[in-house]
Image (cartoon, rainbow, N blue to C red; front, side):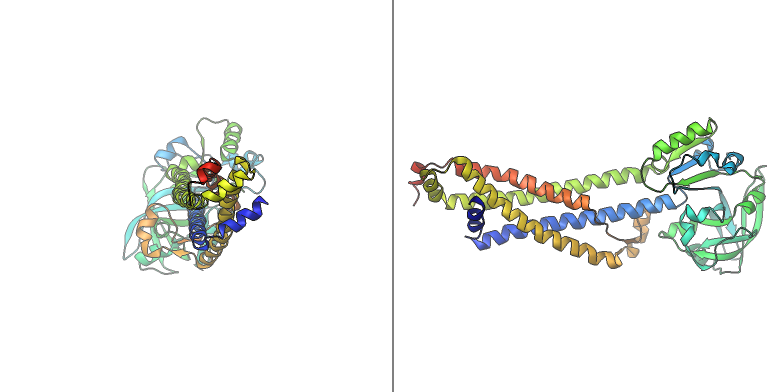
Amino acid sequence: MHSELAWRNIWRNPRRTLVITTAVVIGIWSIILLSALTRGMQREMLANGIKTLTGHIQIQNPGYIDDPVVDYVLDAQPFKAETLFTDLPAGSHWTGRIRVGAVAANARHSGGVTLVGMDPMREPSVSFIGGAVTEGRPLTASDRNKVVVGRALLTTYEARIGHKLILMSQDATGEIASKAFRIVGIFDADMEATEKTYLFVPLEAAQQMLGLGDKLSEVSILLPAMEGERATADILTAALGDETLTVTTWQERLPMLAAYLKLSDSFIYIWYGVVFIAMGFGIVNTTLMAVFERIREFGLVRALGMSPSGIVRGVILESLFLLLMGLAAGNLLGIATVSLIAIHGIDLSALAAGTEMWGMPRIIIPLLTPTDILTANGVIVTLGLAVSLYPATKAARITPVEALRYT
């Protein structure tokens, strides 16, 4: 009976009902859209950070972290045996690489770059280079003096596939080593800065050029899932048993990104609060107006024997129906909006100079998670019913005698 009366009561003033329902629709729609855009941005930024030669875990010489030069290298022998990686989760990938600062030059241009000596067999499974070569070909195990460069760097140097680049860097003896490499491939990356920074050559070619033998700058590990990085790093640290090596997670290597991800979660909850405050005032105002319009009615039902708790229950049910109608429509609208945006994403190429500074991708694909939808709906329903208690208790305090004073 209470449910039927509550449903009829909210349609006694259809305009007011539609206004507050529209407010709920806009509120949940905006929460779903903002959450999806934020999650999508988080996913792309994290993927870029992990794939841009960071991985989930890195093993390095402690000195290399602050000064990435050939003086701080690793002995490759323990990693060749692969015994260290037997405790990694199934589906993990790892690679050793050389990564040092260098100068790239041709007849038209010269500038600073990062020289990456990569294992052509392992590197594609760990970093972005695996699917990034869009012209020419990727490096192979048989290559010696070949290089893959970014499209933006190729444009800057006015070069093309088949041209040569001279790479220069400090070798193990402290002298400047140089070598000519022929361009065989061009890669595209989400960020232009990545295309301008990295040059990829075969690992053996980099080791030979720098006089490093079989030594490595770092070992990068990609786990199958974004969890348990610290525990896995501790296992590797114990397995290495070498104080001259350090094992770090991506949170330690990318502290700015880790801080941003935590901060962006806070923004979502702040927006929950903003939306709820706006809706809360509307719900309280609407319910109070309905209560004041029906004072004689509440007095009459009290005189007929309805308890105050019954009146509270009726008013709460009215608020619940308003919330549920708004949430149903808002969820459908929000999911539809996110689905449409996800087809092509939001292109931020025009703002690339500003977004790249924060590691943001050029195109944001929204990501909608069931957890965000359920959390948003749960928060709105719970707090909406909580604020409805105020007008409900005012209605319950109306006595038959008091109601007689109203005409």
